[in-house]
Image 1 (cartoon, rainbow, N blue to C red):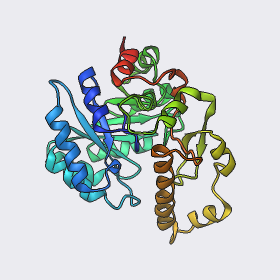
Image 2 (cartoon, rainbow, N blue to C red; image 1 turned 60 degrees about the vertical axis):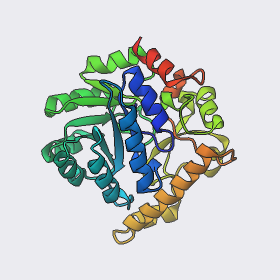
Image 3 (cartoon, rainbow, N blue to C red; image 1 turned 90 degrees about the horizontal axis):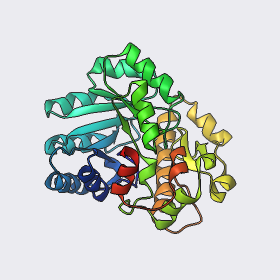
Image 4 (cartoon, helix red, strand yellow; image 1 turned 120 degrees about the vertical axis):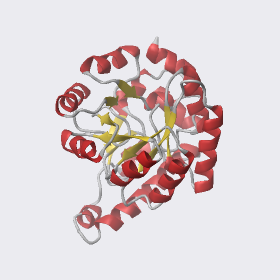
Length: 299
Protein backbone atom coordinates (compact mmCIF):
# COMPACT_ATOMS: atom_id res chain seq x y z
CA UNK A 1 0.00 0.00 0.00
CA UNK A 2 1.74 3.12 -1.28
CA UNK A 3 2.29 6.20 0.90
CA UNK A 4 -0.19 8.96 0.06
CA UNK A 5 -0.07 12.50 1.43
CA UNK A 6 -3.02 13.06 3.83
CA UNK A 7 -4.70 9.80 2.76
CA UNK A 8 -2.53 7.16 4.46
CA UNK A 9 -3.01 6.51 8.17
CA UNK A 10 -2.47 3.81 10.77
CA UNK A 11 -5.99 2.37 10.35
CA UNK A 12 -5.29 1.67 6.68
CA UNK A 13 -1.89 0.14 7.38
CA UNK A 14 -3.23 -2.11 10.15
CA UNK A 15 -6.04 -3.38 7.91
CA UNK A 16 -3.54 -3.82 5.09
CA UNK A 17 -1.22 -5.91 7.27
CA UNK A 18 -4.18 -8.05 8.35
CA UNK A 19 -4.99 -8.59 4.67
CA UNK A 20 -1.40 -9.61 3.90
CA UNK A 21 0.15 -6.50 2.36
CA UNK A 22 2.84 -4.12 3.57
CA UNK A 23 1.85 -0.49 4.09
CA UNK A 24 3.60 2.86 4.11
CA UNK A 25 2.70 6.33 5.44
CA UNK A 26 4.29 9.68 4.50
CA UNK A 27 6.09 11.06 7.55
CA UNK A 28 4.71 14.45 6.54
CA UNK A 29 1.21 13.24 7.41
CA UNK A 30 2.16 14.04 11.01
CA UNK A 31 2.56 17.64 12.13
CA UNK A 32 4.85 16.89 15.05
CA UNK A 33 7.57 14.38 15.85
CA UNK A 34 5.57 13.17 18.85
CA UNK A 35 2.64 12.35 16.58
CA UNK A 36 4.96 10.54 14.17
CA UNK A 37 6.51 8.49 16.99
CA UNK A 38 3.07 7.65 18.40
CA UNK A 39 1.97 6.32 15.00
CA UNK A 40 5.04 4.06 14.80
CA UNK A 41 4.39 2.70 18.28
CA UNK A 42 0.74 2.05 17.36
CA UNK A 43 1.76 0.08 14.27
CA UNK A 44 4.40 -1.89 16.14
CA UNK A 45 1.80 -2.92 18.72
CA UNK A 46 -0.73 -3.87 16.03
CA UNK A 47 1.74 -5.68 13.79
CA UNK A 48 0.59 -9.13 12.78
CA UNK A 49 2.77 -12.15 12.02
CA UNK A 50 4.42 -11.60 8.67
CA UNK A 51 3.19 -8.04 8.44
CA UNK A 52 5.40 -5.05 7.80
CA UNK A 53 5.10 -1.28 7.65
CA UNK A 54 7.23 1.67 6.71
CA UNK A 55 7.32 5.42 6.21
CA UNK A 56 7.98 7.67 3.26
CA UNK A 57 10.47 10.52 3.58
CA UNK A 58 10.68 13.53 1.28
CA UNK A 59 14.46 13.95 1.28
CA UNK A 60 14.92 17.26 -0.53
CA UNK A 61 15.36 20.71 0.99
CA UNK A 62 11.64 21.54 0.82
CA UNK A 63 11.14 19.23 3.81
CA UNK A 64 12.76 21.04 6.71
CA UNK A 65 11.58 18.27 9.09
CA UNK A 66 13.41 15.52 7.20
CA UNK A 67 16.42 14.93 9.48
CA UNK A 68 14.34 14.89 12.66
CA UNK A 69 11.81 12.55 11.06
CA UNK A 70 14.59 10.22 9.97
CA UNK A 71 15.97 10.18 13.52
CA UNK A 72 12.58 9.13 14.94
CA UNK A 73 12.13 6.35 12.39
CA UNK A 74 15.61 5.01 13.10
CA UNK A 75 15.14 5.18 16.86
CA UNK A 76 11.84 3.28 16.61
CA UNK A 77 13.26 0.83 14.04
CA UNK A 78 10.50 0.75 11.43
CA UNK A 79 10.66 -2.09 8.87
CA UNK A 80 11.49 0.05 5.86
CA UNK A 81 11.73 3.62 4.56
CA UNK A 82 10.80 4.83 1.07
CA UNK A 83 12.64 7.95 -0.11
CA UNK A 84 11.28 10.47 -2.61
CA UNK A 85 12.28 13.70 -4.36
CA UNK A 86 15.95 13.99 -3.45
CA UNK A 87 19.17 12.20 -2.60
CA UNK A 88 18.68 9.22 -0.26
CA UNK A 89 22.34 9.09 0.76
CA UNK A 90 21.92 10.17 4.38
CA UNK A 91 18.74 8.13 4.82
CA UNK A 92 20.45 4.97 3.57
CA UNK A 93 23.45 5.54 5.85
CA UNK A 94 21.41 6.19 9.00
CA UNK A 95 18.72 3.58 8.29
CA UNK A 96 21.22 0.80 7.64
CA UNK A 97 22.89 1.53 10.97
CA UNK A 98 19.50 0.82 12.57
CA UNK A 99 18.88 -2.30 10.48
CA UNK A 100 16.18 -0.65 8.36
CA UNK A 101 15.81 -1.30 4.63
CA UNK A 102 15.55 1.65 2.23
CA UNK A 103 13.58 1.59 -1.01
CA UNK A 104 14.05 4.57 -3.35
CA UNK A 105 11.54 6.13 -5.74
CA UNK A 106 13.11 6.34 -9.19
CA UNK A 107 11.72 7.38 -12.55
CA UNK A 108 14.69 6.60 -14.80
CA UNK A 109 17.83 4.50 -15.09
CA UNK A 110 20.26 7.31 -14.26
CA UNK A 111 18.78 7.89 -10.81
CA UNK A 112 18.36 4.15 -10.26
CA UNK A 113 22.06 3.59 -10.81
CA UNK A 114 22.84 6.47 -8.46
CA UNK A 115 20.80 5.05 -5.57
CA UNK A 116 22.20 1.59 -6.29
CA UNK A 117 25.70 3.00 -5.81
CA UNK A 118 24.57 4.52 -2.50
CA UNK A 119 23.41 1.15 -1.17
CA UNK A 120 19.63 1.20 -1.67
CA UNK A 121 17.89 -2.11 -0.99
CA UNK A 122 15.27 -1.89 -3.75
CA UNK A 123 13.87 0.42 -6.41
CA UNK A 124 10.33 1.81 -6.48
CA UNK A 125 9.89 2.20 -10.25
CA UNK A 126 7.47 5.14 -10.58
CA UNK A 127 5.95 4.96 -14.05
CA UNK A 128 3.72 7.27 -16.09
CA UNK A 129 0.53 5.71 -14.72
CA UNK A 130 1.30 6.60 -11.10
CA UNK A 131 -0.72 9.08 -9.10
CA UNK A 132 0.86 12.15 -7.54
CA UNK A 133 4.44 12.75 -8.71
CA UNK A 134 4.66 10.32 -11.61
CA UNK A 135 7.39 9.23 -14.00
CA UNK A 136 7.61 9.60 -17.78
CA UNK A 137 8.15 6.00 -18.88
CA UNK A 138 5.56 3.27 -19.25
CA UNK A 139 5.68 0.45 -16.71
CA UNK A 140 6.96 -2.29 -19.04
CA UNK A 141 9.75 -0.13 -20.46
CA UNK A 142 10.84 1.15 -17.04
CA UNK A 143 10.78 -2.22 -15.27
CA UNK A 144 12.72 -4.00 -18.00
CA UNK A 145 15.30 -1.21 -18.27
CA UNK A 146 15.96 -1.26 -14.53
CA UNK A 147 16.20 -5.05 -14.43
CA UNK A 148 18.64 -5.13 -17.33
CA UNK A 149 20.93 -2.45 -15.96
CA UNK A 150 20.83 -2.74 -12.14
CA UNK A 151 21.04 -5.59 -9.64
CA UNK A 152 18.34 -4.27 -7.30
CA UNK A 153 14.83 -5.70 -6.90
CA UNK A 154 12.22 -3.63 -8.74
CA UNK A 155 8.84 -2.75 -7.21
CA UNK A 156 6.51 -1.18 -9.77
CA UNK A 157 4.47 1.90 -8.82
CA UNK A 158 1.55 3.01 -10.96
CA UNK A 159 -1.12 1.44 -13.13
CA UNK A 160 -2.41 -1.28 -10.81
CA UNK A 161 -6.05 -1.50 -9.74
CA UNK A 162 -6.93 -5.06 -10.81
CA UNK A 163 -5.36 -8.49 -10.49
CA UNK A 164 -4.65 -8.55 -14.23
CA UNK A 165 -2.72 -5.29 -13.99
CA UNK A 166 -0.78 -6.63 -11.00
CA UNK A 167 0.04 -9.81 -12.93
CA UNK A 168 1.15 -7.71 -15.90
CA UNK A 169 3.69 -5.85 -13.76
CA UNK A 170 5.06 -9.12 -12.42
CA UNK A 171 5.33 -10.48 -15.95
CA UNK A 172 7.48 -7.47 -16.91
CA UNK A 173 9.94 -8.41 -14.15
CA UNK A 174 8.75 -6.55 -11.05
CA UNK A 175 8.95 -8.48 -7.77
CA UNK A 176 5.96 -6.59 -6.38
CA UNK A 177 3.80 -3.51 -6.79
CA UNK A 178 3.13 -0.30 -4.88
CA UNK A 179 -0.57 0.59 -5.07
CA UNK A 180 -2.00 3.95 -4.00
CA UNK A 181 -5.05 5.51 -5.67
CA UNK A 182 -7.41 2.52 -5.32
CA UNK A 183 -7.10 2.84 -1.53
CA UNK A 184 -8.23 6.49 -1.41
CA UNK A 185 -11.87 5.43 -1.53
CA UNK A 186 -11.58 3.11 1.45
CA UNK A 187 -13.59 3.35 4.65
CA UNK A 188 -10.33 3.63 6.59
CA UNK A 189 -8.68 6.48 4.65
CA UNK A 190 -8.51 9.82 6.41
CA UNK A 191 -9.88 12.10 3.69
CA UNK A 192 -13.31 13.62 3.25
CA UNK A 193 -16.29 11.70 1.92
CA UNK A 194 -16.30 14.09 -1.05
CA UNK A 195 -12.72 13.15 -1.98
CA UNK A 196 -13.55 9.45 -1.73
CA UNK A 197 -16.68 9.88 -3.82
CA UNK A 198 -14.73 11.82 -6.44
CA UNK A 199 -12.56 8.73 -6.95
CA UNK A 200 -15.77 6.82 -7.69
CA UNK A 201 -17.35 9.46 -9.91
CA UNK A 202 -14.29 10.44 -11.99
CA UNK A 203 -12.11 8.18 -14.15
CA UNK A 204 -8.80 7.93 -15.98
CA UNK A 205 -9.82 10.53 -18.56
CA UNK A 206 -10.30 13.08 -15.75
CA UNK A 207 -6.70 12.92 -14.46
CA UNK A 208 -4.47 15.88 -15.40
CA UNK A 209 -0.97 17.06 -14.54
CA UNK A 210 -0.64 20.26 -12.55
CA UNK A 211 2.44 22.32 -11.66
CA UNK A 212 0.47 24.32 -9.08
CA UNK A 213 1.09 22.14 -6.02
CA UNK A 214 4.83 21.66 -5.63
CA UNK A 215 6.36 22.98 -8.83
CA UNK A 216 6.92 19.37 -9.88
CA UNK A 217 4.14 18.00 -12.14
CA UNK A 218 1.56 16.13 -10.06
CA UNK A 219 -1.59 14.27 -11.12
CA UNK A 220 -4.94 15.52 -9.83
CA UNK A 221 -8.61 15.07 -10.65
CA UNK A 222 -9.71 17.69 -13.19
CA UNK A 223 -12.44 19.28 -11.09
CA UNK A 224 -14.10 22.58 -12.08
CA UNK A 225 -11.80 24.38 -9.63
CA UNK A 226 -8.67 22.87 -11.23
CA UNK A 227 -10.01 23.90 -14.63
CA UNK A 228 -10.59 27.42 -13.33
CA UNK A 229 -7.11 27.99 -11.85
CA UNK A 230 -5.25 26.11 -14.59
CA UNK A 231 -2.43 23.61 -14.32
CA UNK A 232 0.57 25.61 -15.54
CA UNK A 233 2.90 27.85 -13.55
CA UNK A 234 2.58 31.59 -14.14
CA UNK A 235 5.31 33.41 -16.06
CA UNK A 236 6.54 34.84 -12.74
CA UNK A 237 6.84 31.38 -11.15
CA UNK A 238 8.65 30.08 -14.22
CA UNK A 239 11.07 33.02 -14.12
CA UNK A 240 11.78 32.61 -10.40
CA UNK A 241 12.33 28.87 -10.81
CA UNK A 242 15.09 29.59 -13.31
CA UNK A 243 17.01 31.70 -10.79
CA UNK A 244 19.82 29.69 -9.17
CA UNK A 245 19.69 31.97 -6.14
CA UNK A 246 15.92 31.90 -5.58
CA UNK A 247 14.93 28.51 -6.97
CA UNK A 248 15.24 26.60 -3.67
CA UNK A 249 13.16 29.14 -1.74
CA UNK A 250 10.53 29.50 -4.46
CA UNK A 251 10.08 25.73 -4.58
CA UNK A 252 9.80 25.53 -0.79
CA UNK A 253 7.15 28.28 -0.69
CA UNK A 254 5.28 26.72 -3.64
CA UNK A 255 5.30 23.36 -1.87
CA UNK A 256 3.92 24.88 1.35
CA UNK A 257 1.15 26.75 -0.47
CA UNK A 258 0.26 23.71 -2.56
CA UNK A 259 0.27 21.37 0.43
CA UNK A 260 -2.04 23.68 2.35
CA UNK A 261 -4.46 23.76 -0.59
CA UNK A 262 -4.44 19.96 -0.87
CA UNK A 263 -4.93 19.63 2.90
CA UNK A 264 -8.03 21.82 2.87
CA UNK A 265 -9.48 20.01 -0.12
CA UNK A 266 -8.81 16.59 1.39
CA UNK A 267 -10.22 17.27 4.83
CA UNK A 268 -12.88 19.97 4.41
CA UNK A 269 -15.93 20.57 2.26
CA UNK A 270 -14.63 23.33 0.01
CA UNK A 271 -15.05 24.58 -3.53
CA UNK A 272 -11.23 24.55 -3.83
CA UNK A 273 -11.09 20.89 -4.73
CA UNK A 274 -7.50 19.88 -5.47
CA UNK A 275 -7.72 16.11 -5.16
CA UNK A 276 -4.56 14.13 -5.92
CA UNK A 277 -5.18 10.79 -7.64
CA UNK A 278 -3.95 8.60 -10.48
CA UNK A 279 -5.70 7.09 -13.51
CA UNK A 280 -6.32 3.80 -11.68
CA UNK A 281 -9.39 5.38 -10.09
CA UNK A 282 -10.98 4.23 -13.37
CA UNK A 283 -11.71 0.93 -11.62
CA UNK A 284 -12.92 2.45 -8.34
CA UNK A 285 -16.68 1.91 -8.42
CA UNK A 286 -17.60 2.02 -4.73
CA UNK A 287 -16.25 3.19 -1.37
CA UNK A 288 -15.29 0.01 0.47
CA UNK A 289 -12.95 -1.53 3.04
CA UNK A 290 -9.17 -1.89 2.61
CA UNK A 291 -9.56 -5.66 2.89
CA UNK A 292 -12.02 -5.70 -0.02
CA UNK A 293 -9.63 -3.65 -2.17
CA UNK A 294 -6.80 -6.08 -1.40
CA UNK A 295 -9.05 -9.01 -2.35
CA UNK A 296 -9.86 -7.33 -5.66
CA UNK A 297 -6.15 -7.00 -6.41
CA UNK A 298 -5.16 -10.50 -5.38
CA UNK A 299 -8.05 -12.85 -6.07
